[in-house]
Length: 614
Image (cartoon, rainbow, N blue to C red; front, side, top):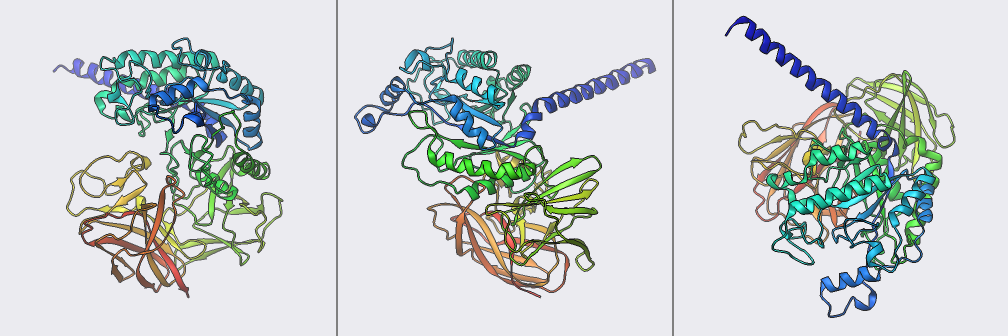
């Protein structure tokens, strides 16, 4: 090949690389502009609202389809008031609302020109709910987003094989053409954008398109380009795009939240009881304290908290929801500085005392320590922060707090000790405001907690398979394997933010720092369904500081798993005790020593719980 030709090809390659780089930079700037309000908002209201089967028909002999059709025909929320809904959200400190425009049932709550299966043409209500809600949100400076189900059990061109409920459809059509449905869906999305100017689309129901050949039908890039052109952003349920290849942000699984800073924009949509839509028999209401703990946890890990309400058949948000939101709003009036417009904690793992957020201010940084479990001895310790601390105070009152910096040479880590009131300033969550010099620099290793516990998150462990699997990373790459696991050989992270171990030779290990030598109970924390019997047939061995304990996983206690769906629990098994004789960096390994044949443990974490600290 001639020298001139080589030079030409090299120049073209350079130009192509430059253009791709420029396109990527432009795309990133565009995404940053679109996502700015979302990143600052942190807290939103999800509203699940639709047609409910009339009570007198619930136990009738009508088919499911007939009951549903009757529900739509009877839909008449006579007490619906968009201003009241928006007022409740505003008083709660929520910055945006996501409303269910069309759920899986296909019923549209706006005056759609593309179907007569909508609130105007089919119901006695005959009011455009979206128009009223959009006007109320605009007046209150609340951003409006739309939930839109890709699945549609009523549309004649929605082939049941694409359904998200095992082929379910109210009126199955063997001649359905899914491409015609896609034209309909795109037309409705454009209609919604042009008529109501939403800032966000919350897609759902695309599980029938997980096959790569089917996923192409969604036209993910085209859809996101369309939305972005109207100034709207898209969640990742548009074809399960958890890798964020096309969409703007990640939607976690229902009622799911990560256990640390996952490094991307995400949102955790959660219920206030156990139901999305109104359910008068569901009295499993979360306490205001738990709702606030979830808020600080999600925001501290870099995400948004989308908290659901389900108005009743008359269009009224239940008092149980309203009263809890009022308490959250009162807390945010005093402590919102620690939430709105903040960034995630610089620490990669969870704290068992609460959560942390940050805010840049010129050359310094504010750290907000939102403390749900207030120490009773008047001392609060933070380990691993290298920056110079300029001042510390209580956010609510501005009261200054005394503090001291120490370096633990044995552990090789710094310690900040803050003198705090023995009684928590706030009965729900108290916030300590700390100003540090520069950008926070923290030790990225797992560090012993304030109360002496060591919590080793399974997802952040180093993985060891029974046999070598070529080209497989020994550590999970990114948070995305939490939500849609990549299939493969050996130990794999699971959808429930756990790591499954079942064969002899499967193992995990972690490095961690300890400040206080002593004797510790070794606890294995696993995920389990509420009614599931915990009796896995197998053994696990944990080795640390030259000591090993091996045992079956026998249930010690269980509790609600607040980072998972409502039916999930945490179950704790104590393997035994180990003694760690010196401070510093240690390695802990957890290994399967007898196959788990009937029930494979889904490990959330391994914990060292202090029995006696020397």
